[in-house]
Length: 83
Image: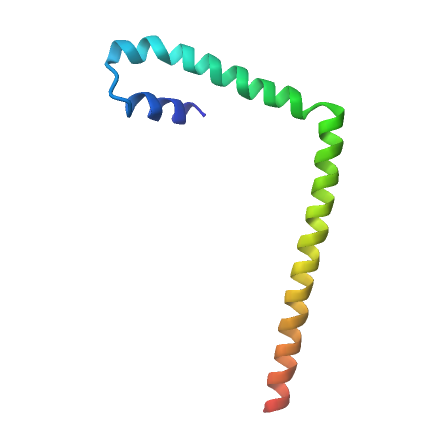
């Protein structure tokens, strides 16, 4: 986060004094935003929603990798029959 703020300030063509004046403002704004995200996503409803989404994501990925694994096995068996 701090690297992004610094690169934004350094790349904007500001003078050193302007950067010195704006750095605390942008840093405070970033701290408030990321602090708000931390509080928001630690609430019970957000944690429960995140867990539901994670379970669905894991199930989908397990299915995809299962299909890939079965297709690789069947491909290997097909190759062995050709020998």
